[in-house]
Length: 105
View 1: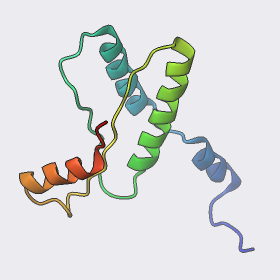
View 2 (view 1 turned 90 degrees about the vertical axis):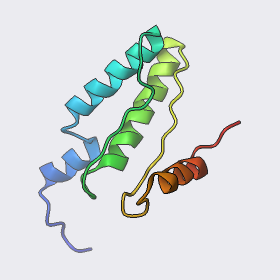
View 3 (view 1 turned 180 degrees about the vertical axis):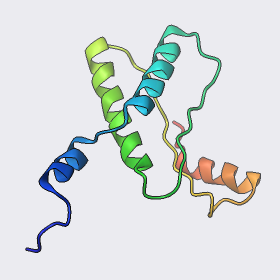
């Protein structure tokens, strides 16, 4: 097997999912406001150039929320949708893309 170009410390950091303190704080503040019923916004957006870890961040946040719901006995439900701006170039295509991704009961 070829050796990795990353140091062992870097490999461990990647596995542990580090350097996301601010997004976690913003997300948890938002969840607290939803649980308290004091929120006016209904959407939280994470955006950025490709390859910076947005999807991994959302995955970790959703996992954290599931653990939090189990511990607190709360049920804050989050719907996740992923959009690539290169695929959606008008408001109508954005709405159609969201409609395809979000499943309603």
